[in-house]
Image (tube, rainbow, N blue to C red; front, top):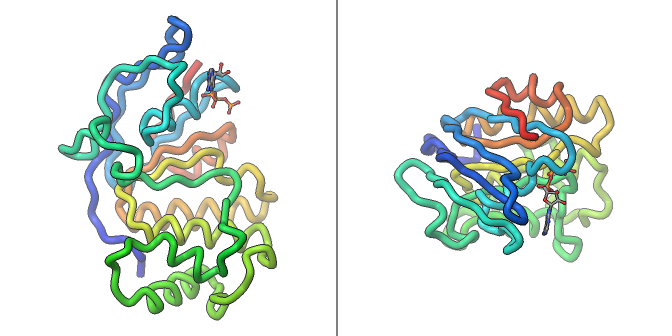
Length: 214
Ligand SMILES: Nc1ncnc2c1ncn2[C@@H]1O[C@H](COP(=O)(O)OP(=O)(O)OP(=O)(O)O)[C@@H](O)[C@H]1O
């Protein structure tokens, strides 16, 4: 069972071009189908995080950008970041330290959602952490934190997901486990996703198209 409804719409990057100080930094034209992961690779400074910031709606004013970002028929550039339906997963799990594990997961749930308690316990069960509701996130291992962060993201019912080097801080065994968990969950949820990574093994595991910047 997955915690996110299917299906969603494709994420379309329509002739996106971003410049810094008058020089073109990147240009991308791509469509990511529901359940597909597009991997973006490229050297440091080639603009990978900048591309994610443009899609998510928090591009710094230093940059000038053109081109469309569409979720199905919805023009995301006309919406503020919080109304774009984009979920983010970073290198660090970024759990709220003042909330319990359940509190962190509830934070992801839309305000109007029903059966919150049940949704949280089901999510914990799915990641092998049944009964962890009241735990302080500081007492979790790195892998447990990463799994809670993934479930918080999925419970928030995003319509597309951006992943910025989500596995780079995990050790090898854990990295493989998280890759398989993350990509299977995204596929099952039918979410289009964009993965930024330096690691070719991430791209292989994602199984989708790869584009190179820079
Ligand atoms: N807020 C900003 N103001 C001005 N320049 C910036 C800003 N943020 C990033 N840059 C510059 O924009 C370029 C692209 O940066 P970006 O962080 O997107 O690269 P990246 O490919 O994600 O790099 P890395 O792999 O090291 O994370 C770099 O030259 C960087 O120095």
